[in-house]
Length: 175
Image 1: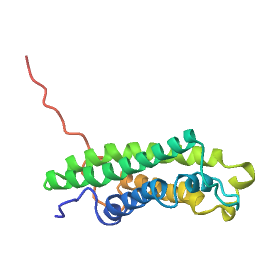
Image 2 (image 1 turned 120 degrees about the horizontal axis):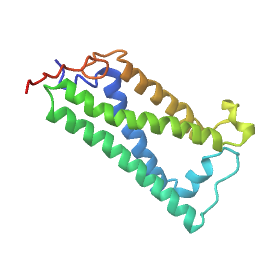
Image 3 (image 1 turned 90 degrees about the vertical axis):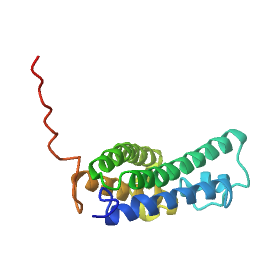
């Protein structure tokens, strides 16, 4: 048995490596290069160059978003590894802990997609060919994450140990 049966194959590659790496990349892009002004400007594609600077409030919010990206990357990376290392012989416990995290992320994915889609100007909403990499990252990539998280909960491509399993019967004590 693998030391991480609750997160095999594609799920492990995506949730333990690819997603945290892509999220930490956003942190560096916001905080270092190309910077908060570029990130803010790219959220809605319009083909114009990014401004040199943002007002202080907007910069603060973008930096806080970058910090949230760093937090998420660390939670996924470090907590998933801690679960794997602490519970190698307990796939049901692994799955239960991972499921709590993945459930929160599934809700966050759905609301993120909705907020991003609603925030796009109407002329861009239904023309994905007009989207830039940032719009695709915020919608297309997150749709893929949402679908893979849903597939994990459905047990597609993996054995289920906790979710979808009958709950253990509790013995009734006679008083």
